[in-house]
Amino acid sequence: MGSGLHRKARTAPARATWNAQTCVTIVAGLTALTIAAFGTVPPAKADPSSADPRSFEAYQDEVDRIFEATLAGNNGWTKLLELCDGIGPRLAGSESLERAVEWAAATLRADGHRNVHLEPVMVPHWVRGRESLRLLHPYESELSMLGLGGSVGTPPDGIQADVVVVSNRDELDQLPDSSVEGRIVLYNAAMPLDELEPEAAYSAVVRHRSKGAQWAAERGAVASLVRSLASRSLRTPHTGGAAYGESEIRIPTAALSVEDAEHLDRLQARGVVPRVDLRMEAETLPDARSANVVAELRGTLQPEEVVLLTAHIDSWDVGQGAHDDGAGTVMAMEALNVLRKLGLLPRRTIRVVLWTNEENGTRGVKAYRADHADDLPNHVAAIESDWGCFQPTGIAVDSDDPARTQRAIAETKRILALFPSLGGSDQVPLSSELVGDSALDAWQGDAGVDISHLKREGVLLFGHEVDKSRYFDYHHSTADTVDKIDPRLLSINIAFLAAFAYILADVEVPVAES
Image 1 (cartoon, helix red, strand yellow):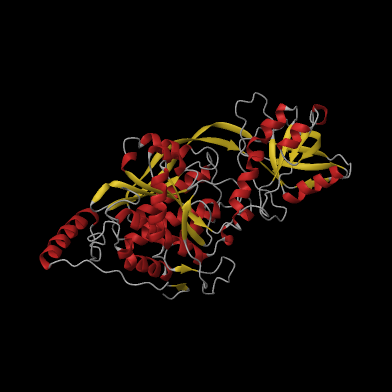
Image 2: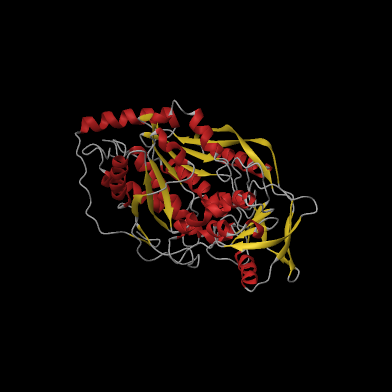
């Protein structure tokens, strides 16, 4: 293939041979069914499962068509600009999230999809308000901070207190109460990127952000700060969710930029006690109305069976939510659009669901699980895209049955072998061709925060995996803006998801079914 996509050498699979009468009968029946359901006639193609119910290799032509057509032109970039530049950040409970929900539904209808509708969800409504953190001693200076989602506010006059810096909870537990009471605890817990891959490095320290306020309050602290969970920083703080659990004492909590956290740590190491003034107007209002956005490419032969293609439409209230998860939202929407335009109508229904409230509650998927309880046994697979718009690397697979997961991994590897080699990186000039060779793979792993709630319902889960080396540069920060997205990589990921979802929805015997 051209366009910088390199085809791996492979032998063309043998195609099944039918007699003329069989072909006429099947084509006539499918054509009538399709016209009734969609008003269009898809290009004729042989049933790839006629000889082998899992003949993935017979989908090579469809995979090629999807990648070639998507890279030749699609509406993904326009959609992303409308969402990020036109609407902006989309925190649960905000007016901007509801504008995004309405925009997505209107756009999906305009693209001609079926069963486009909103499924109501009540979501938490946390409001940041004005906030600041100022160093008072040893000299006066503004510090770069962002309140953590769900935090309580400070008194109107703020909190003026000394800071005690610890590397982790273990260090906090070793301090005497006199070193913590009445102070602000700063967890200067760096992501261990020299030891772990980005996702694992994030997981190793995220507990300090989510639970640090609880731990500090138990020791008598008046507030807590956490070093931003960032792989690189230009004094840009990264927010995220904090939880108080059942704690009766709730103290304000915020993220501090990497540079400022290191500054306070150095002061303490020299025997200087930093003193700061923290002011936060944060408050939690009554739950607000929101909705999941749903649209379908209706199946032709087994429409009651469903493959979910999902992302979350909400974001934090800073930046534009471009990588997290505007890109994933647009990938799901445009993947469905690509298949419809090509007339590739699978035997099962592909249902796009744009989850609301992933960032601070996962209320969207919880509502879906409850509302679709009777329908979930017909969900043969769920795909989630929530790692930004970078180089695709493969698929993470998960289920409630280890043997089923291993079968799914093996079959997913066969599907990905059909895809072109996707070389290059998001750092090449946008006018350059993507070159190189990057083998796609499948492995057992976390498929996504939202769809993980469907695991116990027996749904087979697939996570859209990309190169994460730069994801935490932007994650949950003011830097997560649309200029950080490479339009060409957006197109490649749209094609990737369209091809993968199509095969899952069209193969005669679902992946990993015995």
